[in-house]
Length: 127
Image (cartoon, rainbow, N blue to C red):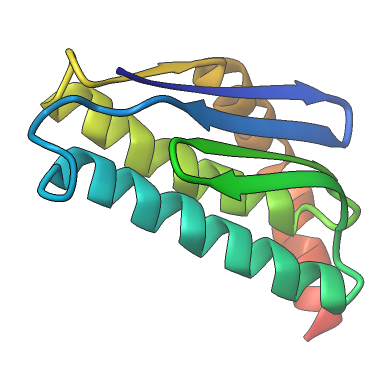
């Protein structure tokens, strides 16, 4: 099973996913492939946002069966990006409940939606 978790402490956000889905044999597991695509896209976008000074990554791991990153969300873009990842993982967990689990998403969603008006205003101000 892939165990995904998101934790937030103020502007510090940690996202992790560990394990294998076990839906199909290695090399043909569509659940693992979907999770990998989500995590790789998230990681690439974090790197790009860090280059632009929008967030600050602390640590990151992207290896077979393990994804983990810690970052400081300076502008709010990371919160929105993490919300996109949560929605994708939530979808997979709903479709393949024996293969994917997610912890901590409710709290992150609530805090992100509470901050959304300020995040949008900040994004408009940078355009």
